[in-house]
Length: 104
Image (spheres, one colour):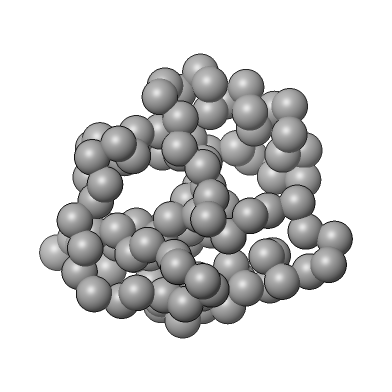
């Protein structure tokens, strides 16, 4: 399930993952949605922020053990485009993790 972000409010209904969400950059994960939401607000509320809220997705991954929420950034058609974006524009991210959302 993907939780889409609209006007800085989380829509917490179960929404089907958009079919056009392919490769994306993982910013943060946690098993508590509230912590993911707080992290997102922290990085998008700064006056100096380079991040646009509309570029983020929260993907919910369910396993037999637990739920995990992934804060994902932007959408790319392939892994190489995501990697190049990460290397060129996201120098603050220590380890750039590319997520293939088609596997969810």
